Image: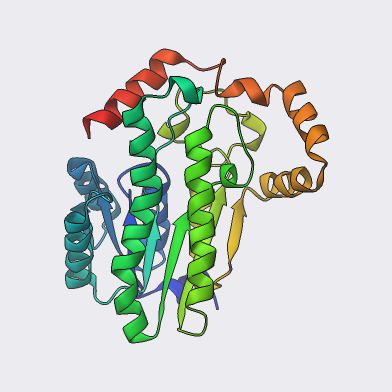
Length: 276
């Protein structure tokens, strides 16, 4: 089955769809013939993206608010039909040493990256179970399997959704509903603004979008983006921890998101998050 044939006519809802990875996912799926509805806390940006990509609908969505998420899913299905796929993409990635992280930022990361995924899954799942088909895909991160200094709360949030996705897969085996996780490396979006992410391992939003499209056509438990980053992550997991940490320090990974950060750029990013 070709990707286009496997996606044509499917109803897909994408959270955090106005920018970055979410926008790329929406574009790839819509181009393949899917009926795509995006939701985003920035309603104006969502509307602009929806118009530019000719999506089925673009709606306001706060993934931390049950009423907002319920209204989004109801409106998505009213516009596009019963939901075949929910892509839990909305997420934030503040960085810096944990002791200096504001409590409001810590809570915001967990609310969006973890609770938003659990909430969306809980609301979308009953309809899928009733129909005996569906697919919930969560955009996690390789940071969920590779501890990274300067990203304590973010790593914890991504570890949480990876564990949650695996439990959902086990709880609903044989139901017709699939659960998958996408683990991107650092991706060229606003999330890495002000950081010195390793350029040789950066992914493009389109890489992640194509991985999501591939999962819809051929469901799997997990997929990493990029493939090289995934191979290196596996190698790191097989390497004795002291050796892996030694080479990480030699490469400067322990400083990338703690000391070598453009503070002005990150402050602007954090302030924008707090205003939402």
